[in-house]
Image 1 (spheres, helix red, strand yellow):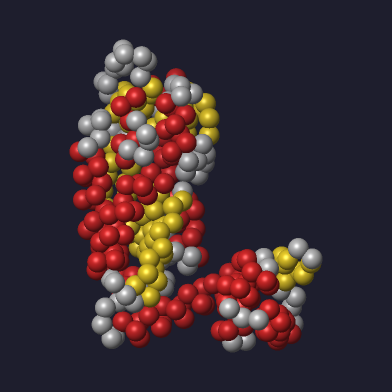
Image 2 (cartoon, helix red, strand yellow; image 1 turned 135 degrees about the vertical axis):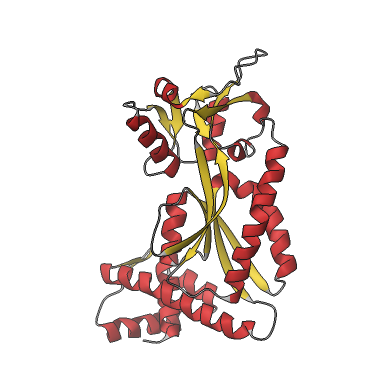
Length: 308
C-alpha cells in the first residue's frame, strides 16, 4: 500500500464514482481504476462495489476509509510542519463552528485569518455540537467550537465564554410581553421547540427539570437553531436559546426574551482540539487566533442585540 493508492481510494469512496474522482484528481480514469484494484489485490479484500451508476463501499472499504482519512491527514500535517520551518505557516486547516454563531463570526474571522496567514487556506464548516465533536475525533476537522462539550480524554478544551439562556416567544401585536425572568420549573408547562437528544442544551434542560421532578413539554424537535427561531416567530411555540442565536434571525425585535433563573441557566462555549494528534504550527496559531477573536466578536454582537 502506498499513499497514492490510498488517496485515490478515499476520493473514489467519498465521491461514489471513478469518473468524478478522476476529474478531481486530474488522473485518467483507467489509471485510477488500476491503482484502486492493485490496492484491493494487496489487501485481498473487495473495497468497492462497482455498478453502472457508480460505486459503493464494502464493509472492508468502510474500515479502510476511516483509517485512510486519518493517515492522509497526518501526512499532510507532517508536510505542513516541514513547510512551516520556512516562515509563515502554510497548509490547510478546517474549523467547525455551531450554527448559532457561524454567521456572526465567519466573516470577521476569515478577515483576520487571511491577514495573519496569507500563505494558508481555511475551511469553515457549521454543524451541531454532537456532529462537530464526532468530526474532530475522526480527524475531519482540526479545531471545533462546541457548546457545553462533554469531557473526553481524546480532546483538549479551552473555555471561551459563558452565555445565559433565555426563553423566547413571539411578541403579540403591539402589546409588550413580560421580560421578567422565569423560573426553570415553569418551563415544564410551556410547549418548547427544542433540539433532539443528545443535543447538549436539551440534555441540560431535561436533567435540571428531572432533578425537580418535572419533564419538558415538547412541541417540536428541531436541530437547526435558525429553524427554531423562525418557528418561534411564526408562533409554533417557545424555545430556549442564547442571545447569539437570536442574532441570526431576520428580526429579533419581534421576539421577547426572558432570562431563566432558579437556578440560572447558561451555555459554555469552548474551543476544542485533539489531544491525540500533534498540532501543526498553523493549527496552534489558528486556535490562538480563534480564542482571542471569538469572545470579542460575540461581545460586539451582544451589545447590538435588541435584548440585553
